[in-house]
Image 1 (cartoon, rainbow, N blue to C red):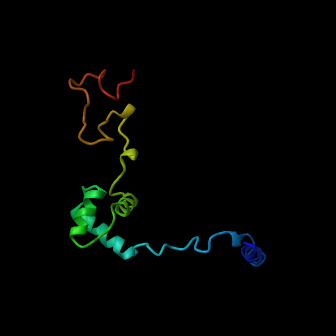
Image 2: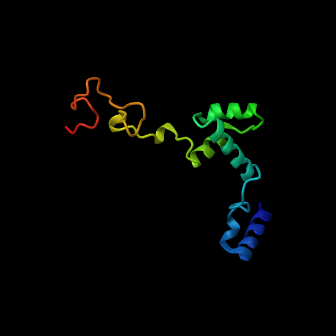
Image 3: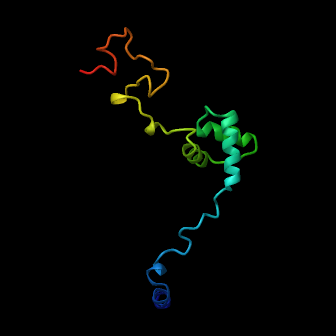
Length: 122
């Protein structure tokens, strides 16, 4: 314990406050996949699996010889705007879908009356 304290105080004298920060801070992780591989996988996603979510896409890519975890793929797809988490989807007032925010829900009112539509101002 005493030798650690002496070593730390010596590092503080030599490097100042930076001695308290971990030595690997700001450097890329050793586990990080190459950017070239990331671009190759994203190109493959755009080509064949554009409408897949990260989990299903990871399974199909693994069958093709691209073993990437679904969380890594989720991060890449979100960054490349190929996929958005459900929490980031905007679907109108109170979770009700609108035509422009959620495709496929042109009019939530069965009879088209403005009182029942989401866009009606009450």
